[in-house]
Image: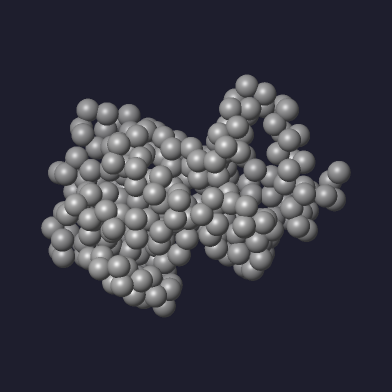
Length: 271
């Protein structure tokens, strides 16, 4: 990673911020983006304290023009792009029947279209450097999760897009990695949208038992260096994907029962 230029969307917290530190410590020059300027500035201060060469771009990935501006500023300052990490994401938590469709659209605009926009405008430069496109997806991109139908749909869409793109680029030297963490310590659940589009504000899961964002970032760094195709994290995540492939009906009930145990789960009313 020495001297390479890495763009990370949604880097003001969680996995994105951890990736900025991990790639920066490995010698990369890092461009961090996000909507929350104050949080980005705080992340910037932490990177500066680590001696990491970096730039901050306040940008909303759901807006195509913001992605264009991120790419423009990166190339103007550093002259190249070697890695694009599509990390920006939001989630939702509500029964589909009760959810305003605008909530699902907002999730898709960030998680799916944000990846499409950033990748579209970075690709010409990544082809020049035989670079890497990384999509931070989820186990929810393999197995649909109840009460998170919009989130699952966005991750399935992201993975289908990146798989198709990987095949298009098969002989063009561009590496595409789809990384799927299991449940990870981050603020994404605290910022989950509920049925009316407001923020829920409290994680329904025990965060202390999850893989840390820092460990996830180190695994992503290693997979990017090795130009891996896929990265599936946590034993629970790997087991979920395996069982869902071979025993899908069994997994319907298992996933239901597991998520029904969450604090204030609406699934409990269905039992």
